[in-house]
Length: 228
Image (cartoon, rainbow, N blue to C red; front, side, top):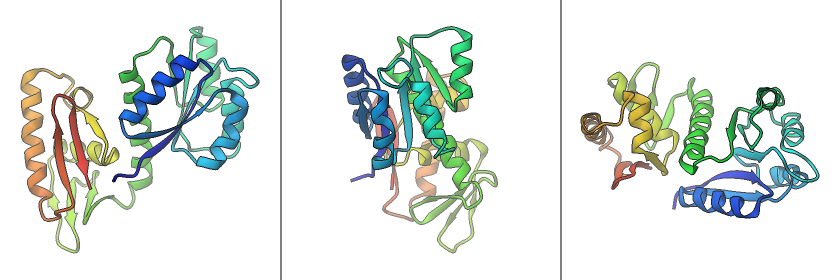
């Protein structure tokens, strides 16, 4: 069973919180929910989540105050604000107190999930850029576009292959949405680019076949998972 990434969600609207929690859990995230801002710091220290999703308008402590407190002890954890506020000054304040992204209500779950994946991928890239990304017995070097197996010499990847494998590895054992990656790497999600991506997936499968624990599976109609 794959290890789940833990997200801390602070949202006082009960119905919205339940929708967000259930949606993220179907994407293989572990979600810790706090109903108000005062619960966040202790929950953060107990569960050490990989990312925070904070509502701005919460009782006891608002999201901006909570983010400021978290930033005093953790400068790296990604923070996404959820808010009905739309004024520029509020957006600026969100970034000034340490937010990484700002999503205005109402929002789609797909948009929230894409933003979460983006921030998690960025963090993984920063952590791995000097050592490469470990995929089973392989090491992917995105900058050099190489894939090395154990102590053997590495194979050279095309730019698209390296980027596609990087995105898959960044959400290892989780779904990489087809529409998202097509728009990210090809700038369109039409039929022809989708077929092109399928070809790249086939090529990557062949280059990863030496490790039987590693596979790329197709989740019909949704996208792909790198299992490792």
